[in-house]
Length: 172
Image 1 (cartoon, rainbow, N blue to C red):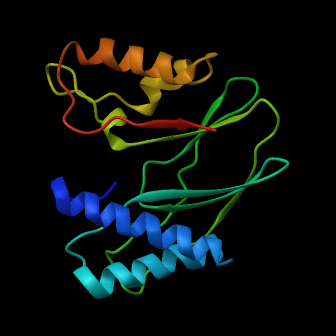
Image 2 (cartoon, rainbow, N blue to C red; image 1 turned 90 degrees about the horizontal axis):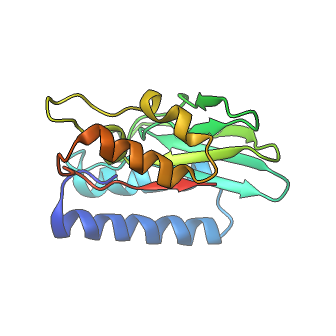
């Protein structure tokens, strides 16, 4: 998520994506990459713009490292279908020049899933302003097609209220 909307937000997202790609491709660690992006943003926009992100490094064999910079907590779906919100994380990227970031190590066993989503999913509203939440979607996350199931539940919940933000999900 990039603060703001329109062309400036899209340009900032593109710059950050390029920076992260270049840093990671050069062999920099995930935490150092996020710290570098944080320093860049703080030097350029002085806390006026910020980014929330969940950066994931997946290694063959199911070992995962996550850096969560103020983003919605990823959800780990265990092989038995139990959903676990990974609430550990740090501040949004670009807000504080002295911020530090840490990696969350995680083993993703066979049959498990990691779900990442934008706040447009968890903040979808019904006609009276109630928000859809990860609790509302937990049963759908263990289904054979979790994206289709969550979006169907979210649309039923919203009862025709149009989206106020993007609605994005990624299942690993």
